[in-house]
Image (cartoon, rainbow, N blue to C red; front, side, top):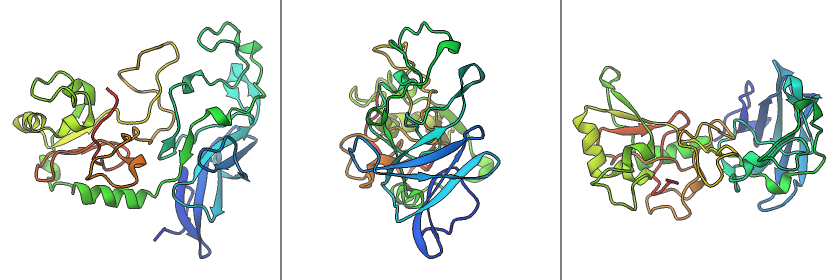
Length: 294
């Protein structure tokens, strides 16, 4: 059962209000003059509905939309001042991603080339900020979409796959690791698994961590990311450029048999449930996946 709508939590959250289920949308935009949430049908190039968010204090804009559920695709549009030299680039013609979205769908490979101003070549910008003018072209067809996620159901499913090992708080030893850096050159991990989340559960990696006395592995980063526009043909190793703060990396096209059906939310796999080595991220309890971009 979804909880009642309480104090605004940023992002999109399932809840019920006055006996009716729906989604509570909330975004922090203190300098905006108006914010709309745009609802999309799957694969539709344009939104079929817009809902105006209302100011609720402290720069937060919110609204409860009844009848909307998990899986709903959405984006944001914001109006406000156009003052690039002051950091204000409000352009309601351009669809925005929710910085607190829990999942994204769509291609993010060219997201770094999206600009709110008219630019002939984003890879080689030449204009001064004072010369930037807002681009009136609607970019919704080129943008990935945010997805409403039933976070409670996903967390429960993740725990069912790999229950959290019982480790006393005074016995926890955290090892921070990068998925690729930890596994890419490991000689005992099969070549096709190296650099992927599946490699973390390989007995050779688990035994290595156990020999070190590690109880908990913190994977950083495991979030959806984009590579900077100047990295043509390459990807950034640190993956710090995130279109949405809590969105996990996308799941593989074919999830393994143990993975839940809602693969959009899948994140790195833990070691086998019988092991005391657990894996977690700053967003959610990890889930089993077989691969990840190297």
